[in-house]
Image (cartoon, rainbow, N blue to C red; front, top):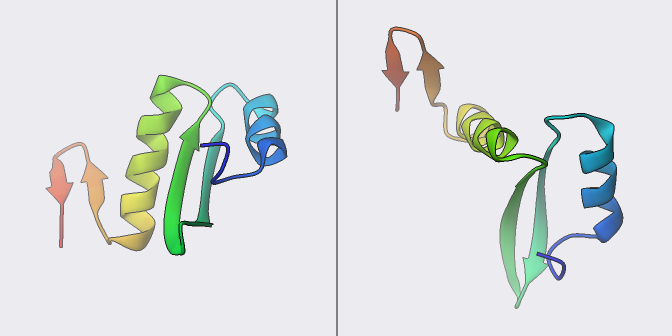
Length: 68
């Protein structure tokens, strides 16, 4: 991951809260990549869910999921 995102971005996210999230894009091998980072295992899951809600229009509810 070090070649995809700046170490200070990850350090700032990790230091900011117990469940820190970081979503960003980066260039890698001439291709645009999405980096999803969480400071804990739980925050990685939260980050993935949030990414899907924002960019894919998915919804996660107590009574079921909505996937377009």
